[in-house]
Image (cartoon, rainbow, N blue to C red; front, side, top):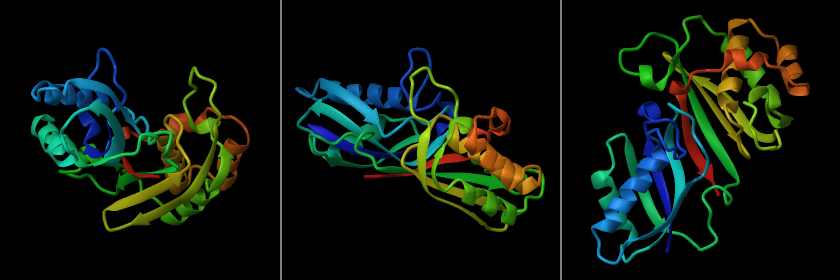
Length: 247
């Protein structure tokens, strides 16, 4: 049996999505709770696999992450959702569970992902864990001009952490937009996929443009040839949310 799981989580107290031996993670917590559910249901003890649509880093949140669960069970989706939510910690919540086709894969079947980054214009008593408070006044016009540069297919090697595996750094950014209200600035970015720390470095560079410290030609230069400079502007994880996965 294969299930498609939609979930939300507050990543503040977790070392990211991916299961690790000596750290608390979202995937690891879900696996532990799933095994616990199956132990309490006779015959439902054959857990196979649980995979997410992609990794989120330490401290990063999700409005809607997607995972698939492979197991042998007589439990229906609604009962499984109820049982999991009964034992999951309060900062992880299953939104929905549905049956999935045998060829569905949470990561490989996805065609795009969308992230939201939230910047606070002021000190806040409530949102510290969910925003990046930038004390400087930001020019959102400059930020929008900077954001437009990232649209389309580009080499984002300057905007990602080097990984041991030899992966392509070409990414197709479908859309990127800046919006604001009285207290916050919202950056949404949708792309085919994302590299490690890519959204946080793009956000940091756009904020530098908003401060007036980077020009559009500087940003175009980062996309034309590798530079370590964007790493110095990496935005904190607190304001980043995985918002939607497209299939």
